[in-house]
Structures are given as C-alpha cells and as structure tokens.
Amino acid sequence: MAKHIFITGGVVSSLGKGLTSAAIGMILEQRGLKVSMQKLDPYINVDPGTMSPYQHGEVYVLDDGAETDLDLGHYERFTHAKLRRSSNYTTGRIYSDVIARERKGDYLGSTVQVIPHITDAIKDAIRAGVDADCDVALTEVGGTVGDIESLPFLEAIRQFALEKPHGDVMFVHLTLLPYLRASGEMKTKPTQQSVGKLREIGIQPDVLVCRTEQPMTEEMAKKISLFCNVRQGCVIEERDVDFSIYEVPLMLVRAGLDRIIVDRLGLPKDRETDLVEWSRMVEGLRRTTDTCEIAVVGKYIELHDAYKSIYESLTHAGIASRCKVKIRKIKAEDYYTKGAELLAGVDGLLVPGGFGERGVEGKIRAIQHARETGLPFFGICLGMQCATIEFARNVMGLEGAHTSEFAQDTLHPVIHLMPDQANLSDKGGTMRLGSFDCRLAKDSLARRLYDAELVRERHRHRYEFNNDYRERFVRAGMVLSGVNPERDLVEIVELPDHPFFVGVQFHPEFKSAPLEPQPLFRGFVAAALAHAKNGGRSMARSLA
Ligand code: GLN
Image (spheres, helix red, strand yellow):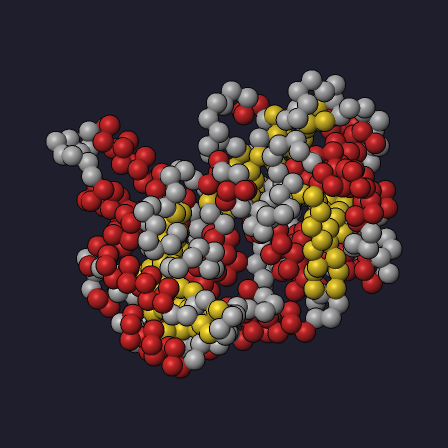
C-alpha cells in the first residue's frame, strides 16, 4: 500500500508549490522509492485546455493526450513518475463526473451533496492517481488555503487521512515568510494564520516549508513551531534560489526534509538520498562560462509561464552543451514593425507554438531572416507551420501561401485543417492530442540527432502540413524528415543546406529533463553555441 503526502499552500499563490512537490518526489526517488505525482486544481474548467495563456500559462500535454496544469511539467522534469489523465483533476471534472452519475441514476433516492458525494469523488480521484506498485503518492492541492474553491479538496484530504492509519499519510504546507524591507524583519503572522485556517478544517500539517528571501533564524523557527503546532525540526526553510530551480531538492535535503518524511511515514532507512548526479548537474550549470543567446519570438512573450517547458528544455540542452542559454524574448508583432535589428547578436531563433493570427507575419519574417542568414532556427508547432509558409512564399514563389487557420480563402493553403477536425463543434479536448509515432528519414538531421528511426512525441494542434504540396516542397529543397506512419502526416521539416533549420509539428519541450535533454533541443543549442563561438557568424552544418 502506498503512503501519501499531501502538499498544500498558504498565504499567497505562485510560491512554487508545484516545484516543491516535484522536488520532494525527486528526493524520494533518489532514495530508491517509486513515486506517483498528482495535482488537484480547484477551478471549474474541466481541464486547462480551453484557457488562454493570460489565465493559465502553458498547457502541459501528457502521452495519453491529457491537457494538464503546467506543474505536471515540473513533475516530469524532476521525477520518473508515470503521468496520465488521472494525474490531474479539476473541480470541473469532479463535478461533471458526479453530475453524469446522478443523471444515470447512480445516486437514486439521495440528495447529491458536496459532503459526501463530491468529497467521495475526490477521494476516488486521489486513489486513481496512485500507480499500482508505487511506494509514495504525492498529491498537490492547487490554490491557496482560505479560497472558497479549495474547501472540498481540503475536506476530502482530511477524510482521506482519517480513513488511513496515522503513519500512512502526511501533510506538507508551503507558506511565505514575507520580508519587510522598511523594518528589516521577516514576519511569521501570515504563516500562523494560514496554518490556523488549515487546522480549522481539521488538517494539522506535519511539515512547514517556508519560502524566504532572507535566512530563517532559529528563533523564528521556534516561534512558528509554537504557534503552528509543528515540531521545530519540521519547520523548513526554502530560500529563493539565486540561479536555478534545480537547486531546490538539494536545499530541501540540506534542511533534512528527506529524513523527516522517511521517519514520519516509516519508509526504509537503509540508504541515503543519492544526489551525486543531480549535484554534479547543478554545479556544472553554475560553473559554465560559455554562453549562447536564443531569441524566442512569440505571441505571449511577456508572460512568465506561457513557454515554461520551452525555456526549461533550452536550459537542459545547455547543460548538455556546457553552456548557459540566455533568452531574448521578442514579441512577434514587434518583429513585424522593427525587423531584424531585434535579432542582432543572437545565436538562434526559436518560434514556439500558438493559436490566433496576431503576430504571425512577424514570426514569418523572423524565420525568413534565419533561413537567409544561416541563423540556427527551431520551429515548434505553429513555429513549424510558419516556417512552411515562409518557404512556400519566398522560396517556392507561392504568393499568398498561408494556413487555412488564418486565411480561409488563400490560393495556397500549405497548412490546412486535419480532415477529422472539420466537423467538431466542441473546443475542449478535441485537438490532435498526445503521443504519436514519427518515422525519421534516413540521412536527415532529425535521424542523426535522435539516433533512432522511430520516435514518439506529443501533439496539440488542429492544422497540419498539406500533403497536396508535398512534392513541390521536396523539389524546392525542403526535407520532410519526419512522417507519422499511420496517417502519413508530415511532422518534421528541415533544410539541409543550413547550419540548423528544423520545424516540428509536435511539442518536444514536453519530453525534456535536466539529465535527459531532448535530442532536437540539444542539436539546436549545440548549433547556437557553434554560432556564438564563431563570433556570431553562420557555420556550416555542425552537430553536437
Ligand atoms: N494553431 C495551430 C494548430 O492548431 C498550432 C497549434 C500549436 O502551436 N500548438 O494547428
């Protein structure tokens, strides 16, 4: 039977609860334990797939096609937990399941209520998230204690713990110790109040992880311990990291969190947490002196979280190439008005995925510049579609070529709607979602970088490369280096006479981790580093 850790958050949102949960999962894995990871989100959308990046940041896609919260990206980057649709539940999903059952007559005779029906459904969801052979199941509760929406989830985890032996369930609460610059002190009151709220519901946290800007003194830990009814040794400091999120697990182990968990849950103590490889990776990252700069030209560039996995994947590839990857964020519309001066001095261009027409012409112009000057280019999803359009217009001379997403009456729809998307009316969960096979062409750059013939990558799109134009693209010199064998869909395009020009219909950023960088990101950053080392001039094709 798996042990359970529930992670809640207090005081304010955006404290890095997902990151802390992922770090705890990673620490336990490094003690030889098998973990499962799950997130419960209090909002009413059935999943985040229909939310704009302004509301939610990145939508993270799993192998099984589930569109999930971006914290699941942290879970996959830090741990080997197998994530699937049951790794992320929202209030909307819980309620729609309960309401569907009510309509079927499953509750015949009873009044359907938050307690017990919704809380029972939440407990079922928690159980569904546990892998059969897992030792520890971690469940993060989204939102902040005190939110109205969070209440049913907190009530459910309280009940869940009550139904298990005391030694099988523990609660970790993440809070903030704000630092008041004017008086030069850190304050514990918000933490006291947040724990007070939890205790009102009937949850006594076993561990408090306190986010701080300044060191937490012994005296403060004592005070928090006293007021929050948490053992002093279990009041842990999690200081702001100065350069990398990958430091977090190291910091938590230094504070003794691994031992606290093992003691509290009665887990085996026959081995220590093995942080050798991870510490080496973080140290390597700290020491690197080589740098390359990548321009990301996107629509939501001002948002911190919209391209989270892409930024992380670039960092991972940097670890592999022993270089720091600096990111220059460029708004696609600005590129349209200001042009190539915005790319001066960069070593690579990445155009990420997206929806909606705004900024598309700017992306296309930036890609033209990269193609013509030999600047390494990596296009993802809409980025690949823009590269295809640019090539059609400027190399093949197909005037007005476009995607039918933005120009339904174009003479040359080189990107068009997938036939199975044509008659869909619902927006939620209806795109081409999840992992699909991609066969790589012999002698292509993609094949060399992956070092495999068949790979699987994750998708999230409605439009695709139009096969009616395939021959013409090939004749003009574009290599269609990755094709989905079942449906004959073009998944990768590349230009052989360019140092690095690759566009992919899928999202490789969902399959990268610090110790296992994604091969295409690796190749891209290696090409960008070669560009940087060559004084910012283009190079002949070079591989990592
Ligand atoms: N809007 C494009 C499509 O639906 C690209 C999607 C994406 O970049 N994720 O095909």
